[in-house]
Image 1 (tube, helix red, strand yellow):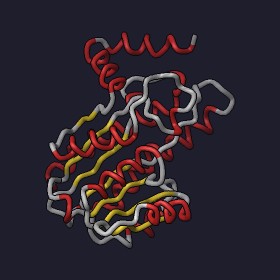
Image 2 (cartoon, rainbow, N blue to C red):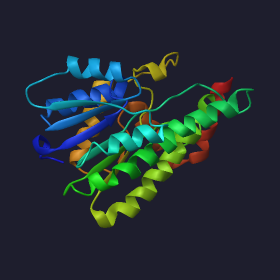
Image 3 (cartoon, rainbow, N blue to C red):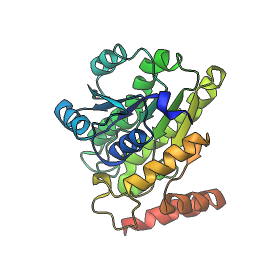
Image 4 (tube, helix red, strand yellow):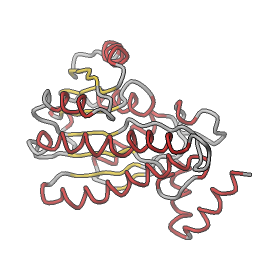
Length: 248
């Protein structure tokens, strides 16, 4: 992925947070084309207009990744793709035993897991047209060990982590690189209300794309996620207990 100027990319959830920062970082690398995907087409169009530049063609696409119709329609517009960044996601801030937990779990699993699974499968024909294709799944450190404050969210990101590993193995024969990214608290809307040191989306985006250029499979793009992962590697049970203390 070092020949950026000839690459075509798609970023889901491209109008805010890490998705917007990744889009800006791709433009800075002067990609040939970036598809900006999101649920709110007007917001995506406004973002594309704001980021208009002389080097990178920006194509807004309406994709609710929980909608099979949206995914099919988008895939029919994309004959070739070099880079798919599955970034769109939601976090509701629920545990497992509230009255609304089942509904929240269904929605978060539909968005954070089945959405990337279905979109990736739909775009595989386009990715297979590339000689240097890559897929980036934006997971979470909460998918490595469950955070009870975000129980269903953690479960959905754990499913995405497992998908990333399985996809990597299946696509190795096609020379399609698969990267998993596991951020901790980032200064975005998803982390509002959590009092942790937070990396900026711009810094995270640069780390992700630099790691992609080096073909790093697993990326922990901020201090908190890197430290928690070191704890997990040394003693998984210790990290589980640390997260559990946050319940008070």
